[in-house]
Image 1: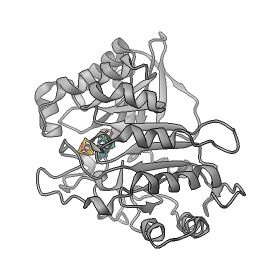
Image 2: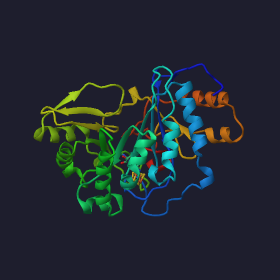
Image 3: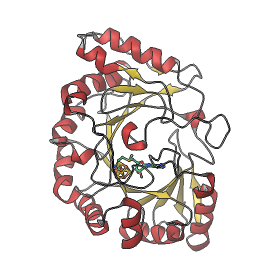
Image 4: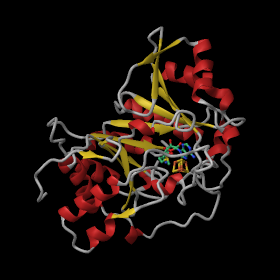
Length: 338
Ligand code: SAM
Ligand code: SF4
């Protein structure tokens, strides 16, 4: 990189920004009801998607110039991107200037391809895995993902454990009247398998526009239900969005992402890069900053740095879900990179 001076990124609300989500594809083999429509998704053309070299160049700027210490790969479904371990190998070499340590590289996946891939991902340098699984009941799983692949995802969780990922976290989007009767089942599953459930409040980023406040299961209710069966105590933690709790009997931990009922915008330290190289400073942002066109017109690192700083300077205080001022972004979760 031509610019050597390390400059941490701070937004106009004095929040230090240091965590990058990279979507590696907009495509997916599932069609979760809370994310994609059943049919009719228009995929990006191959040529629109950043190459591994382009993605790595941008990631290098975030890590080596802006001192980011975390990168999470997502999508769409990241495992449908061909040669994914090759990208992971490149990204896992990046070193955070302030610590001298390699960047913490994580990925969120629907888990369906892990039996074949997880050893290669681990060897390539992936540190952490979150696997999405919304129901332990085959019919409800099929209804929520529109794919009859519960067994494959369960096997994917086992594969991740076998490859040595520790902890393995499981993401569960809670929807009232659909899977909210499974809260304690997931806690039991987590305790038995040694994986950490992360319950996520349903956000208005579904392509079908079916979100409503009544479908959100509040974080407090989730914790109450688990606490009645397996007593919990809070864990004091850093800026990460999950509220974390550990079981009083020492059998592991559980997290809740209360994006709707208790937004964590005041501590938000993340920004996002879509598969086609649009830079976004919030999941709910309306503005996008086109880094791909700078990359593809011979732009210098300094030009990319200036554009990233301009975008972060405009990062807003927070989203307004549930408020009359809320504007639903034009993209669905799969098109941004959740
Ligand atoms: N395909 C991968 C997966 O499902 O894990 C990665 C991409 S997905 C968009 C990332 C995460 O966003 C998943 O845990 C998914 O459950 C969550 N998600 C998608 N749509 C959501 C919504 N409307 N509200 C809350 N979480 C959502
Ligand atoms: Fe695909 Fe993940 Fe969206 Fe489900 S949540 S449709 S697995 S991108």
